[in-house]
Image (cartoon, rainbow, N blue to C red; front, side):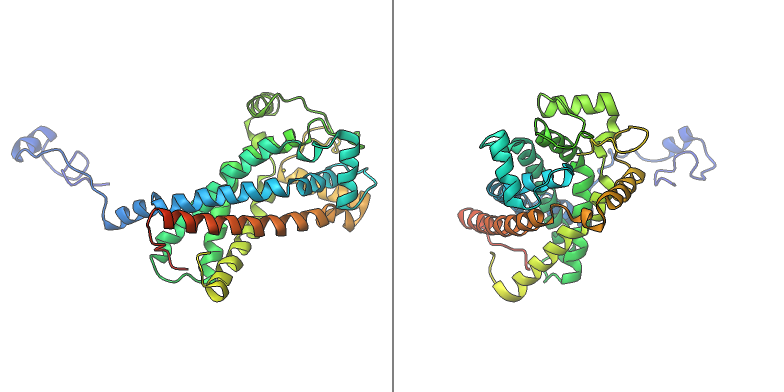
Length: 315
């Protein structure tokens, strides 16, 4: 690329020394961002985006804490294929009876830590991109869908290692009926990271990334409807990867192995096997999302009110 000072290679016949001598001395160049760049930086680093991100993280942590046992039941139904109980409440009763009253909250801290980081990234990315794209105007359903998808992709790529670790920790110490599940012995989040990298390689931390990217449409559509309903009705500011099912006895994680898992499940349990844990997942998703958005809206509204700021973002 040609430089404006006529550096070598810019097509000037004279030598660099002669060229330097023939020009008056200039002070060091000052690189300043243009109006567009300044606006982009302001949108990304705005206080409003930070408030939305923190409120989203707090809302998700609150909601997940309340309904955490439903996620425990869902995970057991999906992972422990030999469990005879099929309904959410019977699985929870079994877990409490066999493992203790606090067993449904096993792995709470790593899950909450991952969820807090994940939703902070998602809400921050979504609101920053919307501030850049919408620029104070009314958003649209299509824009919300695109923004939700992009925010979801960023979130998956940045936080998948946290979800891999928290899933391992959540299932550690559980009593399974499936002998194919390999037991783990992690001392905590840091130790889990260390052991996974040492035994399986760095890329193992991104196991399940491909199916997670496919599921990005889930929160994107959720946000699209949520923002749409806000505009039209409310008018206020209101993952375990430790199965040994393949012949090579390797840990599963790649796209090829994901497809292998799906085929194995269909072969062993039929198409119904693909929907194990659906009841618990639906209950958890609906109730958690409802409580999360409630806390999120109330917290953002209260924060802007206390700080004396107007919610400048139009919905």
